[in-house]
Image (cartoon, rainbow, N blue to C red):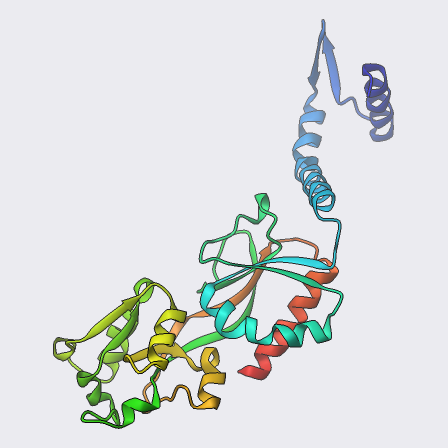
Length: 266
């Protein structure tokens, strides 16, 4: 816009508001006290308009959803059920990425994320999906052989499959079973839940997981829960997005689908 056009818009706005927003000091234009208050009040709204405009220009398809998901949930629960979502919402495109990092929704093209944690994150709207209760799982092969796995005490004769980011889980569940950790001599550590569970299916040892993440393997007999030993954690899976964001059609579709699917699964 030309300077004269800007001046005309300012004059029109000042006449509408009934107060001066700027004052001229020589060649300088300075906000009045009313102008400063008005700027402070509307700055956030203008930023929102700017962000929404840039998002729409970059991705005009309101039926697509950029989704960041913690890897274990993505591979073990979400991907096996993607077909169900596609059948219900064939016009919505999911763009999935695996990440354990928190998303900066304000400066990212990620629309929604699935987090694992306590549900307390700043400037984030979170929706509870599923609380995590850990159980031991292993291959049926471990029920046989010279050291059959029939009770928590039998864990002493088997390899504990750990996840590097959650080393304390085995500590807590062994304490609950009143098993001295000093008697546990064998362990193996993996960088992800998916790798630990793959090793468990091969008979390499015993892993800890929430049964919802291995329901298919339990159904098909690839994994079993060898005995009753559970540890309810303080963490859960949550669907999240930026606080105050208006949901697109695609985001609302995924929100409704996953909350319904998790309710059935739990």
